[in-house]
Image (cartoon, each protein chain N blue to C red):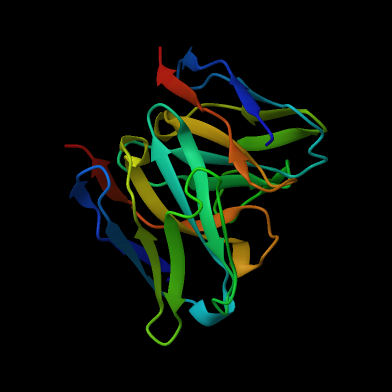
Length: 107
Length: 122
């Protein structure tokens, strides 16, 4: 089973800041990685798939990059609605697995 | 508008059973593979099971194999998860989720339900 390690666990930032979240895989995923955003009491919402393609409705301030075992999600300028938990998910190998999440909180 | 609405969660004793349901609307359910994913504070998001669009085949995580059974009724646009021999570690929020466009290997989930909470405790 592929293990995804996200870092940091918690990130404190201010509105307007640029932040970068990391997701590291235990084996090569090629570009088969997605990112989700989850807010309290809500289901995860897809942001990015195939490592760098924005899902429908994802604002352009969100961008994904990486391949192989190292991936990043960047938010170019944090908006108030972006404070949430972010998960990565791999689909290169069954079973699909998720990272433990990075919480982006207000500084 | 695509909607997935889970129900059936609740409190059950260890060793007990529960059946979760997921009502789907807004898309051609009979053409779509469907998944169950659960979430806990400790283990995060974990894939549980998926079922083919015609319901003829299903796959399970090792942790639930031989205890959980996924099924569907395409005439009613319903997805089910029968959970038997429940354990404390099955306590979680259970989501039904659609892989992108309902495709087998699309790789990511484009729609999720709001989840139904299962608590296994004496």
